[in-house]
Image (cartoon, rainbow, N blue to C red; front, side, top):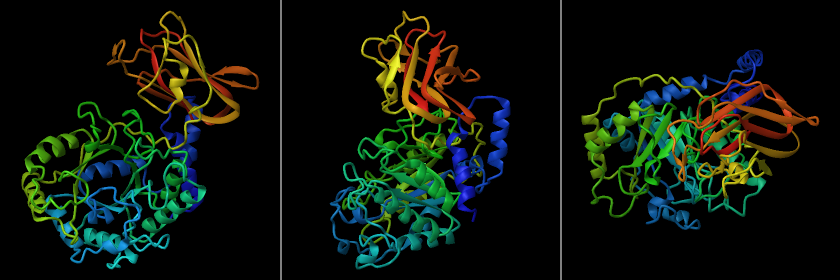
Length: 485
């Protein structure tokens, strides 16, 4: 295993690796520095290998299985967890029958119950009548069938009060201890799907539980484990914000663009109505194999998107017969075709916090109520809109004292309802300036044309203010977020 120092330095490179800009000399130096500290396979290779898997089985099985709610009482007794006929081999056989290539098990869902032999809490399977390590049995069964192993883990934890208003530093340490167990005791993990973070319903920000710290911790344990945050849909689809794989949960209305997506992605959907088992499932209809293959699996794969279909084992620990039968039909309709099309766009994830978030903002004249504060509210659906009479509008953030900066960019809002929906950028030429030692300096950049533009300077700068000035633009210029890292 790589040393922590080497892995940490490589992760630091990933923090700004996506960001484009500055001079050829500094770009070359950054490449040389990154190459000096390898951390497993290159991220682009890991992303491609994950796309090559194409199709996998999500397995929602945890203490909610023994409730009628996907979010049960966080004080629900471990005594209720007792899947007497648990057979992870049946799960694996069902996945193989559907020509799936991997699985992903809910090690801990939002109510905090752990289905592995954890030393971090008594709220686990080891305090139940079952007293068997379900994660171990799952990992062994899937590997025995030649399937890759992924794990799901929830940051939100209502049993241990990892939720708004309660979060303390020890909660981050608790999460790291649990992830250490999961990433050191169960062999190679291809991907860690994280949930309950930076979502409107969880309200746990990437600052409350620091994303960068957790991300680097995962990579220090397993450099080849992809980190896939399930709640990144609020971020623009053209950049890798806080994830190695773009995530789309169809049940939550998160739909990938099958026409324009270029980044490695994963779309998830349950074969039943809900994620966790319900008493009506054995007789309820399930989603048809024909629809799952023709309207999901095939078109998603063509859009650089891996499809993960959920099975919900019952209270005996087995997948119901009606679901098993439909998985088999999928395998009859669809055969694994081999490796996926090569990814042509490679972007490392942004893992650091946005330094502009919540700081005082200033700008030239705004359109009505669309003032500058909307450009650093961590909401990509709101925006500062420049008043069209201003010849060269600008927007800036006041960082306070001089702060080290590695990258500066902005996200343009594509859809401004009171003007029109844009299929192209409204922005022409622009400058990025930073205020240091009492004077404004202009960053040496190459102009970009995407809706999200990121410029980096690997040698770094220090600044107390950052400003973007637009020298030519079309009516309806809207900046959703000013991005400073």
